[in-house]
Image (cartoon, rainbow, N blue to C red; front, side, top):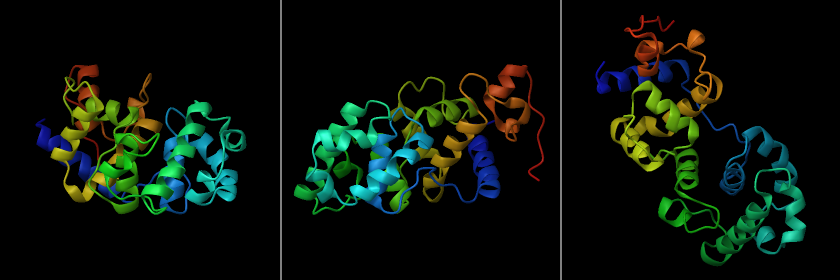
Length: 223
């Protein structure tokens, strides 16, 4: 199957079967999403959703974070991964939002990555989820699934290489959704250690499945 055909099959399936694809992080505004995504690094969305209600209640604005300190903030996030570093990141993030961005979450990747604890992946998540910008955040699920499906060559060794391939080949209007399609498929079906190929609905265009069985997969109905 040609790469172009794989991409088309990918878009056709998910746009029909998962037309609404959203982050599983719970938030009410861009500031809350930013905090949640920073906290979610190397941690599960489920854990973050347990932590953030109290955090958002007591630190509802960048000003609240900026006025806080390590000892006050740490107890709220002590159960997430790397709580020491993330506490420092949130404190610095709050101050920078207040001092440099008028307490507003910036809407460009270039500005977002200036914030403490915000890398390219986090910036891509914020801009694609909040403003539907055609940016592709590459986490471990996106990295793994895009290569297994054959959307990205196995020679792509870095998240940036994978990001560039996906953005190049997926139409802009689908990119912000495709990010979630890949994540959710990786989270619940195409697992890292033991992918659930026997119940996967998209083996008809999956390179991993084809190689695993040494033959062309049988095309499945989209019904």
